[in-house]
Picture 1 (cartoon, rainbow, N blue to C red):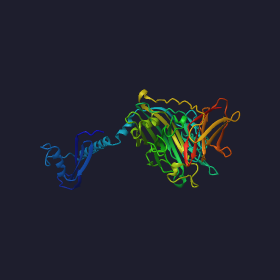
Picture 2 (cartoon, rainbow, N blue to C red; picture 1 turned 45 degrees about the vertical axis):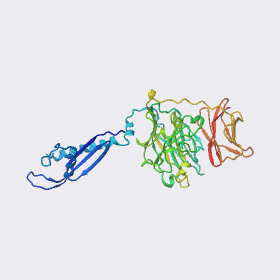
Picture 3 (tube, rainbow, N blue to C red; picture 1 turned 120 degrees about the vertical axis):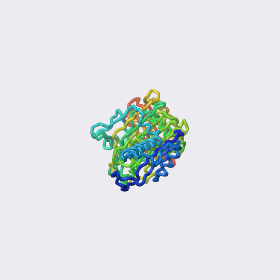
Picture 4 (cartoon, rainbow, N blue to C red; picture 1 turned 60 degrees about the vertical axis):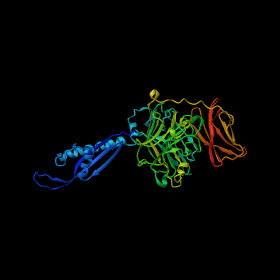
Amino acid sequence: MTSTHMSLVICVQYPLEYKRGQRGNGVLKPSLFSCSCSFLFQGLLHVEVNTHMSRCQGYFMHMFPQGEQATGSQQHRPPKVIRVVILLLIVSLLIAAISVLSPHGVHKAHADTSWTPIWGDNFNGAAGTGVDPANWRYDTGTGWGTGEIETMSNSTANVQQDGSGHLKITALRDGNGNWTSGRIESQRADFAAPAGGQLQVSASIEQPNVSGAAAAGYWPAFWMLGTQFRADHNWPNDGEIDTMEDINGLNSVFGTLHCGVDPGGPCHETTGLGSGQHACPGCQTSFHTYSVIVDRSVSPEQIRWYLDGANYFTVSANQVDATTWTNAVDHGFFIILDLAMGGAFPNAFGGGPTAATQSGASMIVDHVQVSTSGGSGGGVTPTPPPPPPTATAPTGSGFTQSASSVGTSQALLRFQPSGWTAGYVIVHYQFAGGAQQNVNMTYNSGAGSWLYTISGLSLETVIYYSFTYQQNGLQYDTGSYSYIF
């Protein structure tokens, strides 16, 4: 904001205390007066309070010299009620001035932005039902590259609408100590800020109401991945925007942009460009609104994170190189809601889950809404689906992979390290428009390969798949492959 070279002085004289005086007019007379003088000078607000009339008169003499004010004996003091009203008016003006000069004023102005809703879900389904398949798809299985230990399920025990306009995602531990939970992602993957415009993605969420040792390992999240990720699994290049994360019942919120390369790179992965822990009082016992705005109407472009409408974190395009920003931000996204258990993030804040962790806590979602504002065309800029990968030959470094039919409805996927031992291998696959499956492969020591068999296939079905593997204690993701059954 550019400073304006102007001065504004507002002074109010008011009684500081009263004593009983002469009864000539039957009223109390002031024995001491005070003067408040407020200055607006070059865009800065300065307030001083003086308790002696001589000081107050000095201010007036400085600002209005040469007889521009009456002398003390000539001043006519207005009635008490009028003086109080004037004082309240001046205070209101000062508050308005402070609001104008607030460093957050620019972000508050976005409250006046005209938003056009383009998608949403209020979760108004019947109690005990799953999510609307027109809006959402389930991610099932385990091994998401984060160290989390639960198995994601499409069971209504883990993911259900409650009949009162809410979605509940619940983490459950069985008698053997195994955890299940839920993870869903939007069918649509074209939520994008139009060129020159803005995208706002919001959700009203109550975090799992559990704390202390009973909360160890809980990891609720509301986030987005770039459209291209569904085809190439190129994280973090394709962009990840974490609108809300919390861990271990800390009653807080973390906002993060993941981008660039992993590890390190311009976005300091795997940490990303984040807000750090931000206090979120009452977020485990009531609904709060978590929002992110991708703003392409300003230069440099920005991503801003909001909690109940208050901007608490911002990342600007000039914090990274142009290519990194474009690859991570300037395209479509799909939305993810999930409740993970364990992983690297909870481990960084004490770990979990443990034997003391409480089973059955839920992340409850009241609604999700996507809106756009301005820009070319005034609405969302759809990102066309990427063409499916066609490579089936082994690629990558240090392993080979293949897919082959082993029956009338089954295909065998194989991953074989070249001269090294994998700690684990996870295969991610989908076919026939179904949800992505994430499954731990089985090691065959005789063949030195990791194997998994996909069932339920029909002739000409196209399988899209990729792998996550551990080598020398580090985790890696491969590119994507396809196989026509």
